[in-house]
Amino acid sequence: MEEKIPYKTYLSENEIPKQWYNVRADMKNKPAPLLNPGTLKPMTLEELTPVFCEELCRQELDNDTPFFDIPQEIQDFYKMYRPAPLVRAYFLEKALGTPAKIYYKFEGNNTSGSHKLNSAIAQAYYAKKQGLKGVTTETGAGQWGTALSMACSYFGLDCQVYMVKCSYEQKPFRREVMRTYGAKVTPSPSNTTAVGRKILEEFPGTTGSLGCAISEAVEAAVTQPGYRYVLGSVLNQVLLHQTVIGLEAKAALDKIGVKPDIIIGCAGGGSNLGGLISPFVGQKLRGEADYQIIAVEPASCPSLTRGKYAYDFCDTGMICPLAKMYTLGSHFMPSPSHAGGLRYHGMSSILSQLYHDGYIEARAVEQTSVFAAAEMFARVEGTLPAPESSHAIRAAIDEALKCKETGEEKTILFGLTGTGYFDLKAYESFNDGTMTDTIPTDEQIADSLSRLPKVE
Image (cartoon, rainbow, N blue to C red):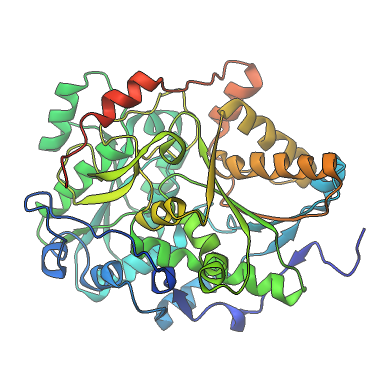
């Protein structure tokens, strides 16, 4: 064992990032703009502010400012659970018998159990600063809803969460944490909104999708005075806030004199992956360093690996702006047997552009292999990982085993987005041998993609 490299590397409180990094400033090909679904013209600040908080709209549209100062109140809140540790996975390396060196950035050291709090507290702060009464949102597996309920409780804001119905039913304890922090949680699609009723009519018996929940949350926001909609992934502003992950990871690696060869993150809407890789991608874009960057998505919702790069609605109800992204179509419904999060039909416009330009690669993995990796990690590293994070663990193990075959001593960094203690129903399914791999057919994806909006 290399004693000079500690198991855990922490930054000091004073080394927590004071600014968020906007990778768009270094992108030669900027992400395509959001389009107004009525006019098909780029969305303006004035058109976005009835839905989102004003300052968040400015962050969303800014392609040129490389760094945004983190307000002091958010910096102070970050100190409750940051800096997050960079961990050397010595026990996993030993179990695999690999010459690879494996590190992971652990984001589960807070009550929400995930990285989502990094953006939730920022969005709640800007809502409070604007004088709003409350916010609405959607949540899939529940991490984002939990984080936002915590942030809203801290600032005294009302929080209304539309939770994907299958997750609402499978993860009652996650739901109860949200309610403990004062949030109102509604299973989506529901009969409480016009768009929810329409979706239920078109898809009777559906267990929902993030696209459905987004539609309901947006409708709830725009029909209640003093409310705005906030989102936990996909949007540029969210990836911006999450760069505290990558900035801390890079600073910790620099502190111990380590440069990763491979960087791996799970990919649903893109917030964790984008946050982890942004500082490293920035170096690639500026020609300062090179890395192999891998986005890992579920085979049951494979937007990057099987989707189309096109403008699409961000929601099933087709009331949100259009985003150019890798998408399976806004009507795509992941199988209810898909036990993890990562249920969104599309991918962040930033990550989609980077993938399209060849700066990152993508692979899709089946959930039984994901949970096999999760259990191995739990047994040797001592932390029960979230199903989402376990997609990255699966790829990290696969890359480490490749190094075992070739004898290469590569250094691997992956993001451990959170813990899986609210996901035990999924672990039960895996342990009982009842978990299945439901992968959409080409015909199912083609049918959903056939409904893409016609944008020149």
